[in-house]
Length: 321
Image 1 (tube, rainbow, N blue to C red):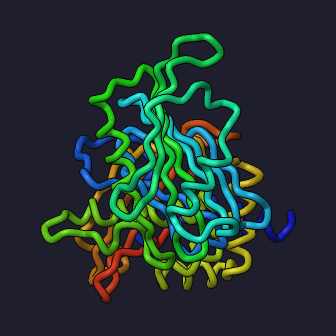
Image 2 (image 1 turned 180 degrees about the horizontal axis):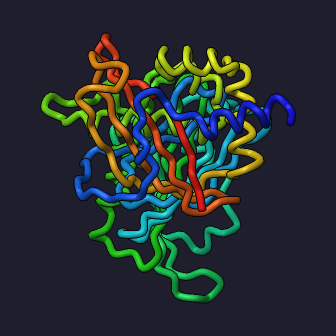
């Protein structure tokens, strides 16, 4: 057994010091959180783009081998929207307006008889939109909006479309544009947005989701850095320092699971006192996820509330049928 496989198997069976035996038993709780967000990035970008998760289902994620460009596609199942975007380095346009004008001028063979064309701005984001009544002779009634973001040397070309569009649905398009956030890496998404009075399960869940987003985008070294000191010490004691962690996570994702296709929150359970760490609070956060190679994977993330007031990951276990 090579080192990468050995490290993977060690992590696969590792139970963090405070995780209970029942951690990966399936259960569902009913509480939901209004500000749940989902993150997307490429390794070279200094930020993670986040959107409200709501009813989004990830259909496709592709990141180029150089780690500088990526394509992401998802559906909003409730509102029947298609959302996709490219992340790539800024090259041929320098700001949001220039990028918008460039994309519009370049055109697209799939834009058949565009009508009601508008070039405008939503806040500081430039966009263009148009209505396409048909496609190859088939009535389509499809609205398209392209919004361009430029942030820290990277360009995001965001496309939203809806078939059987009605004018009163335009607010759905605007809402998505306004909801886009760029979260600096090194700070899990939403950490800076926590509001007074939020319950600890909510906070732990959001930090767990931000950490999982690092694994989803292949940022295994960053996932190590964002983990708790306790977790790093326990893994190192078991012969899994940072380098072997990265190799093991790469093996887990690329060889065993494949790319993430969907993730659904299952449960978050707060613990006032952790076994072995009675002076620390903790939480168990569970998700049911589908990957290219595995379906119904239960991801269990153990969380610890550190003395500096921040929640961090202290354990990660995957389990599947």
